[in-house]
Length: 540
Image (cartoon, rainbow, N blue to C red; front, side, top):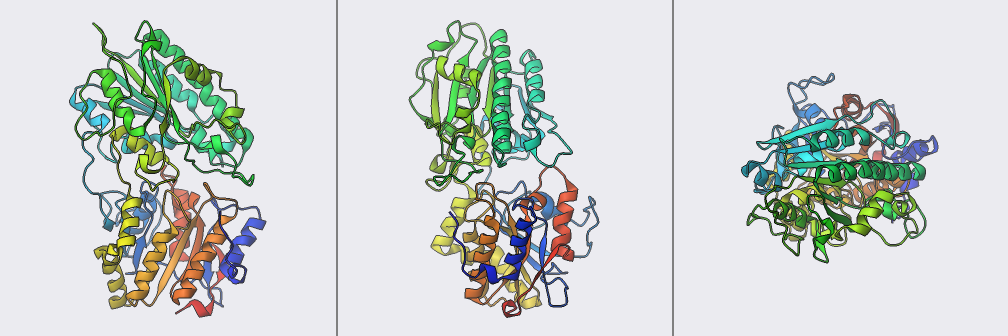
């Protein structure tokens, strides 16, 4: 729960955010607010030769904005061609970006599920909506940009031209089902991997009826897939990446549109067997056990890198016939016994319920340390799909960076020091760009505050903060509270000032909605947005 900063109502920028709330705006799609001087001119804009640290840690939603700021040949909308920013990203967003990376990848994640299937000569088909295609592709392949030999991807377009998926909770799940159905009979593919995005995507919208419709749409499509698998003798594995709407309410009754710490389902309906109910599963497991289980079902050896274990207790070997497998991921479908505030339990889910009651099934850990996150933290799509494909626990960038802050190595990071010493030497501004939140899959104020403290220690004179806000998992109007906390830290250090506030909807796109990215770019570079007075005492 966030607490209000006692000074937040005194801050003109925070007051501008609150005025936007009164006008009907919400955090995630907040129109840009920019700091201005007493004459109304924007201050703290990105200028030629300035230094920038984009401190977000997830990566795939940060690529487009970074491209617009650093790529010399960027052409998706008009940009300043000679901006020549000195740019640092917290982690590697894309290997082609011309930036310094503070915490580069530890190395390639070898022998993931996709790579092992490729090495075995098995063709794999991945099917997903465009809204979540990156998860079954890039993340399931170990954050690998390459497509393995024998792997094909079908991306079904998500609905376009809408302001919110709350108006189309069915999304294009039927399109995903159609592709699954037609390809279950395709002899070219031994393994199909698909996901239904609805519950996760719509679950981030505070619209109860739309969420229930999303759950019921997934269940409807699941029923069709089950019937197709039954007819074609396909081994169906159903699971999820993390929980969401099964815990729709906070203890105080407020709506929780974020992810949860709930376990997720694992169901094995092996229609290739005469008695699909004969298989037995271990009583518990985690997402990293899914890949070893699939390899076991296919009769393939698990590589040494996969420290996860097969969930099968009895033999899965078949005589005279090779299995065809469909791994179906119900994004955001968590398991929770309590019905209070549980929108999955409140929805009609007859097909899922039949699978769960009839076939071998268990719950899998999908949050915290089980998916490489700090203990007791919620899961997310990236960590979930990464662990589904990797078959081992992988410490995520957040854990690595948190440890660097704790042991002091963060303040010795060469990329940060390069930016800060360069800003001092060249008499340029240092810009800190990223999410403001106590805990988001994109980042945390802890990392921003560590950068501010380091800038103060290194004697950087001008620091401007560009805050991205969004309430996934937050209470309504949390953005103003977090911006106030950042301003409070700046006051305590007598350094820095928030000069831009913008909803993450505009800045963190991954579907090439360049009109959104352009809005963020023009706010950062030209100061286009609602003015918020720049307080003189914060100029130090």
